Length: 611
Image (cartoon, rainbow, N blue to C red; front, side):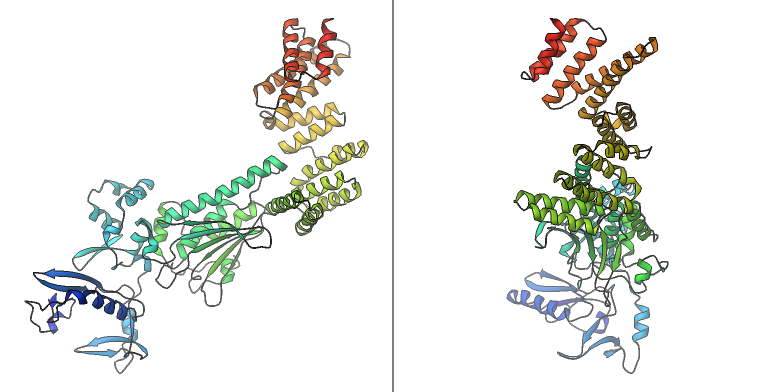
């Protein structure tokens, strides 16, 4: 270190070549300190890649000084202009001269080979301090991965062992990887180091419904954004299950979203010239995850589409990948893309799409929404239009959506229902026929049940029974439940009982299903009791006891007062047939009357029983 006559203290390996008086320093006017710092900073901005030394105002006795540290750069070689407006050149020091490395000495290739590029995330962040790292975040990370480094007490030693800091010029400086994961806001040093999620309206307005920004360490951003997206997906699942009983798919498989998001964080650039954040755009028909810049040289579209195997190109951010692997967020073995394709395929979604421009300035992953999710969007839009009094527009929206995705069980069922309510049975039959020809077998029973319901309501019992007979032997639990209820409406109690049994545990928490199953058993018990012999009586009693258990289960569940009232009434009838004490029978009727005092059936039955 040396002090110039102008009051500048220089640190570096050239100090031996400069002969100056060390002490006492001349010093600088205090009023000039700030302007000199700005001048040095502006001059350094002309260096490519950018380089900024460490400048520290100091005071020695009564003299004001500027201390400048210029540590070796991890992103060398650097270029600088030849004069104020000259061309950029790579300069080297030869003896006492600063010369163009591409000139007579031809040293550029040697310079590049001697300064092999260090991955950006593993470089020293000379413009930051180790105090910018948050020890609590570091130790939370070590706790999450069950690391033995938690036992290291000394903070400096801990950072060095984790290789998130490094000694330079007698003091420790953080590495980029440390700031990216363990600082309060990496965006302070790395522009765009955040994730933005934007949800757009489903209509043509392009309006933003909601926008979320996720900051913090990279792993914290990944976790928080995935949690947010997973919550959106779960909401779609719940709404679909309640409304249409179509299960087995999600709008976007979380495994595919996870791999795409981690890939964006892992492979994006964090240099100063990358200012754009990772962007996640949610449209009605797709999710786009965009990162900057594009893939590293050597990766082609064919590799991304799984047409060719992925080449072993160096990773852009080796250290980020290591930390994400420790958290089990990334694999780092080239398995990410196959996982995306497999997750989309198993979910029944269209294939993912990957694209980037010729200059590789961006990389975009597009995950198409599941066809049934598109159906939900169409139904939501149609409901909105219908609420505004535009019934024709609502129907038009549904037709357009169905024509785009004719294999959608939800849209096909809704159109069949609407045509049936309008009395257009022929149009409903056309939708059903086309859907049955094209759709996966797993969704056909659900739509068939909807069409059976329409035919039954229209008085076409024979056609409805034929379709019920054509239902496959093995149905999902929800389809079995729907078929059971339809069989009851068609007067086919034995078939209804069989379908209720196939529904299994799905009816345990469904008061309506339990009540209808109990009523089916009561009707069958009455039918069996007409037969002769002890076997018929035993079978009838067994059915009545089972009905009693179901009705008592209904009364234990939350349900509207009407359902509870009829459950009490049916329980009274069952107890009467089982020869229970009159007090129990009468008490059950009284509970029913208390809930529905104007229901004449209850009063007539209790009067006929005790008069």
